[in-house]
Image (cartoon, rainbow, N blue to C red; front, top):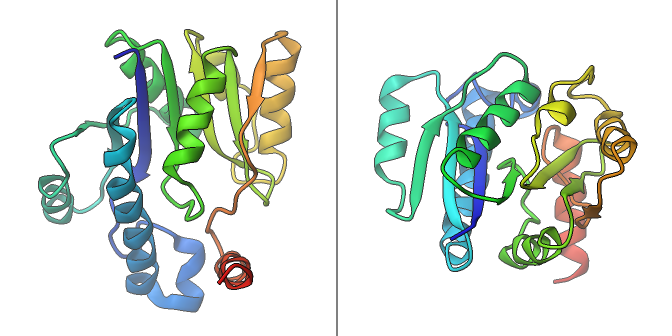
Length: 209
C-alpha cells in the first residue's frame, strides 16, 4: 500500500495535554477530553485502514499510562515516538519516518478534531493523488491536516512559523504556493484548545440533531 495516515498526538495524562483547558476543566478533566477525542480517532482509523496503513506518532510523559495506552491499540496501528524540538520539526520527522518505509502519499493529522471523519481522509487521499500537498485549515487559523505526495515536508514545517497562533495556516499555505506546488484544501474544521472551541463545536452539532 502506498498510502499512510499518521495520527500525531500526545498520550493523555493530567497536566501534559490540553493545558489551555485546565482552568475550566481541571488537569484530569482536560486529559479526559483529550482521551475521548484520541480514542474516537483511533476507532475511526480502523475504517481508514481499508485504504491506508495507520501510524501513531506519540509523545508521553507518564511511562505507566503510556505503555497501558499503547497496549490497547488495535493491531492495525503501528507506533513510533515523535522526535525533534519544535512542533514543526516533530511533524516533519514523523512524515519522513513513514516516507522512509516506502510510502508516497502521506497524511498527518492531530487528534483533537472531533469533526474529522473517515470520509474526509478518504477524499483527501483521492485529491492528494493529483496534488503535491494538502492542508486542512481550522477555524482558529491553524491547520489540523497536512499531506504530501512524494514531497519533502521539511521546508514547510521547519520554516519561521509562529506555532499556536492564528497565522500558522496562512504562513504555511504561502510557503507551499511560493514553491508552485499543487495544493488541495480539505474542509475547515474545529480543533479543541479552549472551552469556547468545545462550546462552538457542541452548538454546531446541535444544529444538525
